[in-house]
Image 1 (tube, protein in one colour):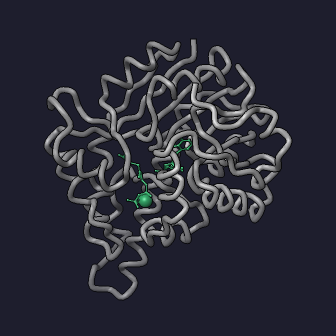
Image 2 (tube, rainbow, N blue to C red):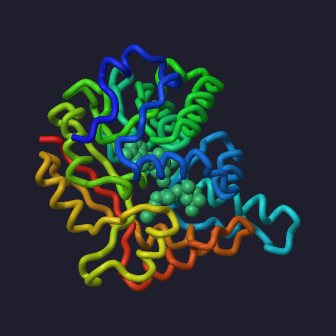
Image 3 (spheres, rainbow, N blue to C red):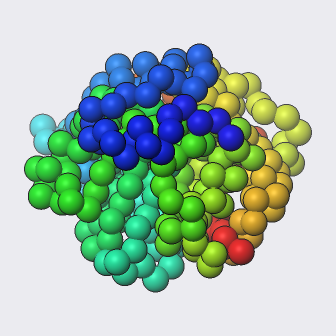
Length: 297
Ligand SMILES: C[S@@+](CC[C@H](N)C(=O)[O-])C[C@H]1O[C@@H](n2cnc3c(N)ncnc32)[C@H](O)[C@@H]1O
Ligand SMILES: CC(C)=CCC/C(C)=C/COP(=O)(O)OP(=O)(O)O
Ligand SMILES: [Mg+2]
């Protein structure tokens, strides 16, 4: 396992005070990437209701709510609509966590600015522990939790998801929301398997390349270069889960459900230039947007 800090160090330090050294030079690059990230497509969407996401949306665009593209307020409505679809994505992930009660603890591996953690706490009343490589993201998530007065239940730490300080066998559920493409899947699932209670639930929503296409397409390579990540194949997910006592219970292909989000986003003023790669790779079958829910057995 790839540990960068000891349990004792994390127990003694307040959540935000201690920033461990990255376990690898790559992780240092990723920490810097997210420390400096401030794209309007993320901040302006988060400003809609204070839930800040770094993942994509699913579901149909409500064209009636959007109204006439010629209207002055159209762009504002489009931003609200894209944000609604991103929160809908989190809702679907949470739907697959199983029965969670207020006494339970959940783990968000690669928690970003914490939008999914807040939504999980608001739905279940439970404790949510998040980890991110970025000190800026952890500070942001913890500040939002304080503003919402839920900092007793929702906490982000700067920590490598491959070596967390969480107790073995305690978490009722854990997830990766678009964060598994930054790590080796065998190392990742070994750590989820360790922290989860037997019978606990693991859920990921992820983009993966489709082995039926053959190899990663040029669009998939473009997405990797854009985000400095390393998208895995669907087959790798299944194999690494099977090797780590995670048995897929549900696999949902969300590819068709995410296309309306991308097509709407491509028309907005907040485009980042990566929209074409997502749309083309989803359409040519080389890339899939999947939810996998697995039981820890
Ligand atoms: C695309 S963002 C997703 C954020 C969040 N899950 C969401 O849905 O808004 C990827 C996140 O993974 C985190 N990450 C990448 N590699 C990591 C690692 N080895 N340990 C912890 N976090 C990691 C990044 O710091 C970032 O917060
Ligand atoms: C599905 C895949 C392959 C995801 C890669 C991980 C990633 C960068 C997700 C979105 O983050 P973001 O919300 O910061 O990105 P953007 O700025 O494009 O909205
Ligand atoms: Mg985004």
